[in-house]
Image (cartoon, rainbow, N blue to C red):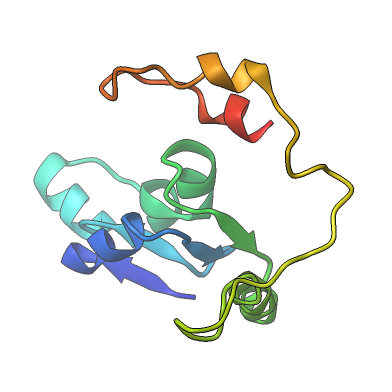
Length: 125
C-alpha cells in the first residue's frame, strides 16, 4: 500500500499475487533520485515503478486498487479462495462449466520445450 524499494522489491516481484494502490504504491530497485544522480535522467516514482508500469508493462502487479480499503477487500476476497489451514479442503464455488469439459486448443498452446515462450493470455481466455 506504499513504496517498496531496493532489495525488498524482489519479494513482491516473485510472489503469486501483488496488489497495488493507485498513486500510493511503488516498486523499484532504486529511486528517482539515484537515477538522476547516476544516469542524469529525470523520472518520477510513478514512471519508474508505479501501478501503471507494473500492471500494464512488467506484469508484476496483478490487481490495482483505487484506495487502501479497496485493496484490503480484494485481499480478503483473494484469501477466501484458499483453505484456512493445511487440513482444510479448498473452498468450492458452484459453476455451470462441466469439470470434464475438454478444450483441445489447450494441447497446442504450451510448447513441450519448457524454454520456449507462449502467450498466457490464450490459456486464460
